[in-house]
Length: 114
Image (cartoon, helix red, strand yellow):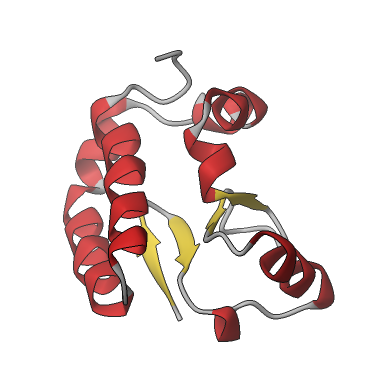
């Protein structure tokens, strides 16, 4: 399971993580992962790293491809992503991570320092 959020996939269930590399990553860290590039395989970042400055700097090149207009155009799909995430989220911790991901994605211009 997972929720599509602004073009990213947020994995909320270990069953959704297929492949040895992803399973090992999930087993070691136990954090939800954000899919950075939906067109590529294994382009994942841990949600905590993606939210932190380290994650934003690491994936800065990908964020530069976004602009404000694209975020506005994706607003409707973003709301659908919220609904899907709330449907899949099973505890308060996952909802808390959703809050930080949503705050960064909607209120901060991608690629800028906080």
